[in-house]
Amino acid sequence: MGSVLALSGAGRQNWPFSSETPPPQWDTPPAYWDTPPRWERRDGRLPNPGSFHALHRSCKDVFPQQIEGVKMTVNKTLSSFFKASHTLHLSAVSPSQYRFHVEHRHVDSHGKDSDSPVLIGEMDSSGSLNAHSLLHLSERVRAKAVFQTQQAQFVTWQFEAEYRGSDFTAAVTMANPDILRESVILVAHVLQSVCSGLVLGGELVYHRGRHDEGGILTLAGQYTGPNWVATLNAGKGGAHASYYHRANKQIQVGVEFEASTRTQETTASFGYQMELPEANMVFRGMLNSRCIIGGVLEKRLSPLPATLLMGAFVNHRGDKLQVGLGVSVG
Image (cartoon, rainbow, N blue to C red; front, side, top):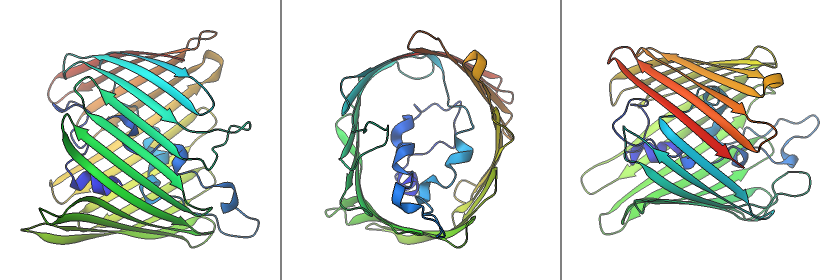
């Protein structure tokens, strides 16, 4: 789905220090949507490789998420099926917003997701809506639907069907079909486990409009070691390489390299995560080739059901500084 959103104009190449409001974190599917089910790992057989858009997730999770201004989030679990959250964001860079988030997801007594439908919705104070749904059609087949509006205008509507075999994943996505404008975006993903640590696959993006038509082929490979993961995507649109390494129980590091033929830009980034269980603290930091340095400190305020986040990002080229404070309750 990431490729579809990129072609639709969404992206985070200018993050941070962008004049545009950053998209919500859940614009990409939640992590538990990409976790292979229980039946996908069997003795003596290759594991399922997961979803294509989750290949770089291990490395990306090490980097800090942008925090700017003052943000307060209140989470409330109403039942085993339903939970809601309220977020108030006061910012000096982008317009201040209020967001209401609801999620319908059934979790069994062991903390694992059931096969019931998953529905996620979010609406902000400007009237923009984001909605995701996940439906298990069978043990191996899943269907997804995504709708996004910008105030009163539809921005994205896409549908995806995914089949997960014992050692491969195949998915097809159709985005923004418009009969009147004769336009559509089609994306096909294939991932195959070659051996216990090697995954190979590819992505084909086809877009058609009234005045243009074309396709982009991207090949992908991932190798997983005992405590590290190396991933590479390369194609006509550019290249994306990442390396994730878990040094010990407390320290994780990640390195990313991205090159785009469309924007003619290349970025290299280094991120790390340090956990201090005794202090209930997690620190994430990053440094990239654009001279941007940032870090976010996350502190669990035990015994209160609250988390405090403090972050700062500095752009040494533009002499810009962004400082953020966030509180999450529930």
